[in-house]
Length: 144
Image (cartoon, rainbow, N blue to C red; front, side):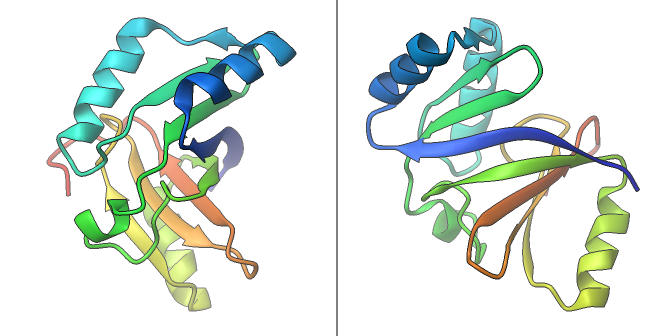
């Protein structure tokens, strides 16, 4: 099972302000408008009603998201990745990772494919309460 840091997500009450700050201070580029529209439409249909801006330094993605304190409740999940934000690792074996979590007794929320088509996502908390996403891309089939 391999892991690679994929993105950082910060939640905000003012998406334009946060996006503009990071774009201008760090010269971050915007990921395509088509990608924005597709992901925002998909997530709205599954429980997250906020908008997301996607920026990149060319290697790492930054997902700035409108805060939604009710996402966990709407998705019937314990962990809410859209209240404060989270950081993300990408894996090539999400099922193996869930098995590892279960073996270690670490509780997690299995969101399945809810926000981005083909991404199977789980969210967990570290000992200090920071939210971590682990996802595997290109997982197809019925969403959960």
